[in-house]
Length: 458
Image 1 (cartoon, rainbow, N blue to C red):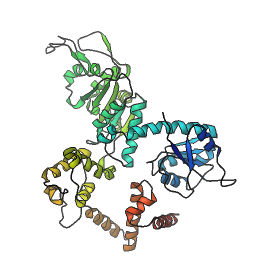
Image 2 (tube, one colour; image 1 turned 45 degrees about the vertical axis):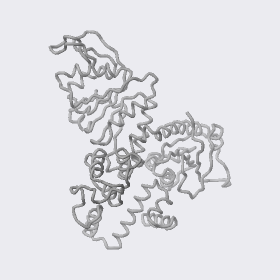
Image 3 (cartoon, helix red, strand yellow; image 1 turned 30 degrees about the horizontal axis):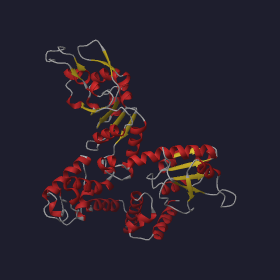
Image 4 (spheres, rainbow, N blue to C red; image 1 turned 30 degrees about the vertical axis):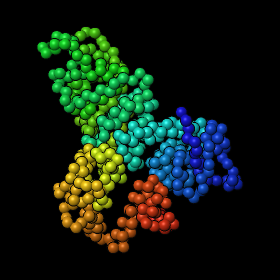
């Protein structure tokens, strides 16, 4: 595995001359990592970072959030003393956006940092390949966080994976990506079995196959899903719909890789990677006794929850352009600003699948070579009140609530401004410069506003 070509180092000096270089920097250089020191007041590293902490620092979590762009960039907090990350500070740093928190001697830290960045460098390289970008569109922090986990578990393990998420969040696409990125040299086919279509009386044949004459309609021998998936990947879609009896029947083959065909006494062997998907709350089903605990822990060696579209709205414009490119190719039309505002603000009970269908209906009405315009939006999808923007209802509701709570006009304006600053910083990964451009203010004005806000909260 390769390590990143350049690594940013940030540290505060707790003693000695300010130009003194920590020994960990020399140790990193000896392992082939080119490093450069970030200015003490910077908020934008533009790449992977090691943040050296000599001791407890009250603003360390805020610095982590800024330098990691709220988790979008890889950042390791390294401390030679555990006091720097004691009393739960390590967990708070991870919540702020750090990828890891390590302690030890200079040599220990350098070894850990080099190994972790080598792994993450490979994960991010795969994340930016066409096979991921073409099929799982999105650049939001929530989406990239999930994709990073999926890429790492796909390439560097053979664990069984449970994909949880609402309908339309892309579970089958993720399952196919797991199979594609699986690093087995002798990998064979991907087999998908929809558990909602399994007839209990025929489930043995579907899963295990059968011998000729084993039941009335068995005029020929048949391979089941576990045989077909041998050497490949088996996807059990909507696994939460399996009744407990069938779950019990699958325990042995999932754990040991052995099974018998219906009508046979001979044990067969199979080896496969198992990926299960469900829209159900299996944790709740476990508590209620609708899902077997022993089966759950066999299929959920690693669990991933795919976020609904409402948690990654900033990906909607990218998805819209992707769906239009699928339909039109290189000649895909642009989208009028108000139409795009509507698409971003709308609720999507069916998530990405719902958005795809809406974009298709709009594109079907479109004619000519210009952009998609308001008239292309189907009547039933237009804002209910004429003359109101797609987002005005939300502003009106918030203003009514604020007035009901007795807030003044000045207080309402201040709260709205604070929310806009917070959202802009989150969506721009903590970058002051990009957030300021979106808000139409100078970098200095935004920094002063943040400082004033922190003083009010202190």
